[in-house]
Every structure is written in C-alpha cells, then in structure tokens.
Length: 277
Ligand SMILES: [Cu+2]
Image (tube, rainbow, N blue to C red; front, side, top):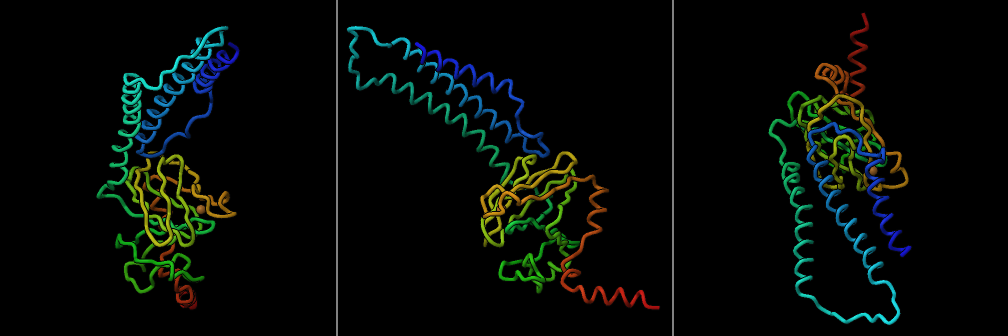
C-alpha cells in the first residue's frame, strides 16, 4: 500500500514540478518557433504516457497485493491486449515524429535570399567570414591554415580577397534577414549553438555543414559549443549580436577584409606614404 502511494506521489510531484517550476527555455530570438512546438508536443505525449504507466503500476501494486491463498494465474498471451498496445504505441510515436519531419523540411530548405556567413571553429574559439562586396565567399581549406592565414582562406581565389574576416571576435548579424550559417571546423568536432536561435549543427573537419535562420529581435546572445571538443570545451564561448540595419552597417564598415589582413606591410606603407608630407 505504501509503495502504491509513493508511486502516485511521484506522478503528482512530477506534474506539479513541471507546472510550478521557474525553469523554462530562454526566450526565442529566431523564426524557429516550430522547434519549440515539436518539443512541447513531445513533452505532452511522453508526460501523459509516464503518468499513465506509473499510475497503472500503482493500481496493480494495490489491486494485486498479497492475500493469503491467492494464486497468480498463468496467461502467456493476450492477442487483443497486444493489438491495442501496438496501435496506441504506434500512434504515440507517429505523433512525436511527424511534426519533426515538417520542421526538418523547413530547416534544410534555405530561402533564396539568405546571405551566407561562415563559422570557423577551432580549439577553442569561434571565428567568422562574411562575403565581401561581391557577395561570394572565396574557397578555403584546412591545409591553407597558417599563422598568417588562421582561417585557411585560399589566397589565390579572387572571390576571397574582399571576404570580411572576424577572427576570434564577436559576430554581428542584421535583424529580420535570413542567414545561412556555413559551418567549418579546422581541427575536431564542434557544434555551433546559440540557444535563443533554437538551431545547431555539428561541425565536421573536412566538410561544410549548415543551417539557416532569421534573427527576430536585437540583442546579445552567447554562442556555446555543443560537442565535447577537448579540455577547453566549456570555455569555447562567443557572442553573436543581432543589430538593426544601421548598427550592422556601422560594424561591418569597421571590419577588415582578407586582403587587408594578409598584406599588413603594404597597408602600413600606404598609410606612412599618406602621412609623410
Ligand atoms: Cu568545440
């Protein structure tokens, strides 16, 4: 009897904890409200099944408790019950999976007007590259990485010369503009994750993965690495700031291109030439 009561209390406690708990997701800042909806559907289904199973267990513990002279009777099979359990389980699993398929379809269908931003992960920092005035990112490769070219941009690709390089600093993105995040790693597995964007993807050395999203509010958001990537994994943080169009333009104007960064001597020489009377 006491065990049955404990089981009922477990269900009541779980429901109360869910209803009264102050912990919930951080407020969303992207178009991926669907991701939240699918999670809520899964919460409801698994929650209902959890309550039903534990309450049924409490009922059985109470109903079939030990009584002098009672003997269990042997029932190895029950076709009717098995059919019902199979159908109900099938429906529950389908209800959890189908919404996810619709969301996944949207997640991998990048809008045509999305601008590309490359994220480069390495132990243990985040860097970024934005296409310059030509709107195209130059090619890149891990074999090109060197102290002078930490992101491995191809110096022979004309498309890459005007690329904006943001090395180990904050990324800014304009609000309400869809963006395709191209994800590269130059050492081990990482995972670019901003909880408020509700989107993340593993980054695999040697290939480029991606996701897209549209920022829906301005603010400062923390980037986390969501793939255990070594001793500094927990410190692999970064900042993404979602700006208004004007703030974004100001920030972009202050950044350096790959060509400027790879030829600092020439830039310095030009400045001296100008300063000299
Ligand atoms: Cu990492």
